[in-house]
Image (cartoon, rainbow, N blue to C red; front, side, top):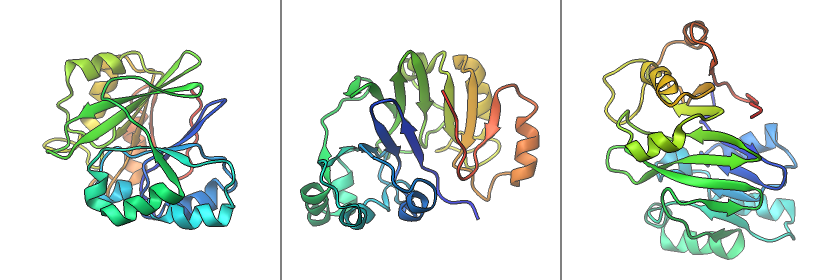
Length: 229
């Protein structure tokens, strides 16, 4: 069974977890045990992306952290979803919330993060542009196919473009589809495309892999996939 999507992005001097699904503890313990995590990026407050955040209180106690809190980059609406009391507890024990602005670079040691505002049906949602050592990776998060000219320009010439596409083809108002993601790769001249956040409304995995092979540089994500940029 496929787990919910999350990405661990590692540069020379910073390790960033992108998205915190409710099964994140299992994902970390089974695949990334012993990681030296520095920060967490949450794109929006839907449960599949933020539901595992309270698990970090347990993880923090078990790891015996003595090296400081984790950076947290997340929309302000996270307080409404988790509640003020839970958010205060997390900030007291585990996280330091960083100030950030859409499309403005945020420096995380040698990793630069640019939050990208995207359209996800009224829910404040942000993709992530990641820059390090001359390399560029883009994660769209959940977005419709309606991307602003500014965001498209920032995506251009990405070495890796990771797109959340739970369904295969239009119409789908609040999520980009596989067919649209392949077209987006061409539009922004991305070198590689990773199709992720696949749901049971999409093609079966093997059929989707066969479809992706028709296009150079397109792969379908699976649990544990590693991509070097």
